[in-house]
Every structure is written in structure tokens, then in C-alpha cells.
Amino acid sequence: MTRGTTKPFDQKLHDENDPEGRKIVMDAFAQMGVPLTENPDKRKIDLLGEEYNVEVERRSSRNWNSGKFTYSTVHVLCRKEKYQESGKFVFAVLSHNKKHIGLLGTKKMKHYMADEYVKEIPNRLVPEGEKAFDVPREELHWIRHNGEKWVHVN
Image (cartoon, one colour):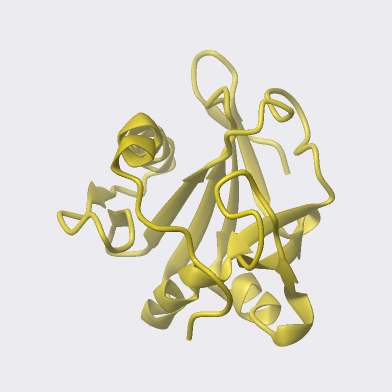
């Protein structure tokens, strides 16, 4: 079910962020022993695997470049809710500098897919009407790249 307004597909924005973001997350999962491949259908979930299917969201905010996620909550756009159906969904949020990733799996995500967690999230691309699930940052598993490899933060 779609809740709220969704931004129209922007090929330029996609080309600037998605391929690199997908590769970084694929490398992080591969290092953890979880191989993923790119979904050939670019209009569906980003990465496919036997254990997990992963949707990658790169944050354009320059406020989160190091350390702890800057905000108290992470916004998972309601239009991503459809990916939950597989039962092996992971939402990956990637920092602007590409050195930090927050991961939210199916079990925790299901809890936050309730109306009480839906918030309207104005942003530069959709100034009003876009809805997201408001998930406390503590619910995500955080990893960072230390210059050599991906390490667990929590």
C-alpha cells in the first residue's frame, strides 16, 4: 500500500547515486559472507540474495559524514513497504561519504510499519506529502568502513 506522495523517478539522480551505493553495500555484505547481486529490474528492490534482498538509500545530507547517525530517527519511505513482502528485506542507509551504513531487517521493520510511526517528511525533492516510517536510530545495526574493511559499530 502506498501512503502519501511519491517523488517521480529522476534518472539523473539515480545515475549519480544508485550504482555506487549498490556496489558499496554489495561489498559490505560480501565481506560479511553474504553475496548479493544487482537486480536487473532497476524499478524494483536494488540487490538480491539467497538470504536477503536489500534496498539501498544513500543520504545526500552532508550532516552525516562521520560517527553516529546525526538524527534520532531514520526515515524509511513508505513506498519501500512493498519490499517487505519477501520476508527477507533489509533496508540499508548509506552516509553521504559512503563510509557508514545502517541496516534494518524485516523483523524490526515490521514493527515500525504501523500508522503510528508514519510521518510526513518534507525534503528538497518532495516538499510536502511524502510519508516515511520514523524508526529510532537505535533499531538499526550500524557498520563503518575503517579504511581497510567494514566493522560493526553496534
